[in-house]
Length: 335
Image (tube, rainbow, N blue to C red; front, side, top):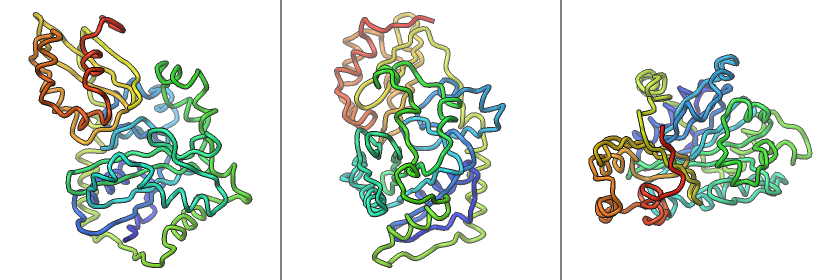
């Protein structure tokens, strides 16, 4: 495995651009990337940013808001959080198998005396408190699995900076988000600063002694900065526009929250947008295009979806449950 040095950059726009550049341009070998971001909210690929963040608060505090290319939910980053990314060839046995991919991280934490384990969809926990969230992205040829490692993050900022949906709160028995999250520092015998922690994690992962370090060339950094400026610095990418809609359907499933916005006119779906914190291997826009123009009836929706492999968009969600969400009788919100 090759360790890529990010040269100490703390700009989340740049670090996410770097990660995307690597997964799209570095072939054949396995890579590891670490980065530490300044205070920021990192939005999942399919989320509606304006409904995930406390906009007044993030503007007041100068907290960056950046969308990533992987699915999942919004997370808060700061200088007490270490982010890791494993970049490898796409492997169907590893995609959506967070336990397998994060096993080396869990082992290093265990070796440090932190009794970590993978639990739920994509979380690493200690004593049922989350210390790491993880997500994945695949180009079809290459993929990355990335995650957070909360060492001594300001957890109070999580609830201030994020808008926590009632669907998420109710699924957790109304426990606060703060009570479910923990810093790794709480489980260590001695205090560590983030750079010492980074060094220990890297040393633990490099136990076999076969890592080499790669530094990007000037031309590669130029390409990363161009991607940052053209995509990750842009309001349209980070926020986008919530479409006009006259029907909204939202439900929490084991695979995550799905929030549908539809514009139905003269009995047909003329526009649809699918938001949520689910994981997907194919762009959700493809499914939106399939549904656009379909007559808004159970039969026509079923016919449109019948040849579609829905697991590519929502992992293990049964097709009939998605159809029920699209056209069921409950939870309809007219705007």
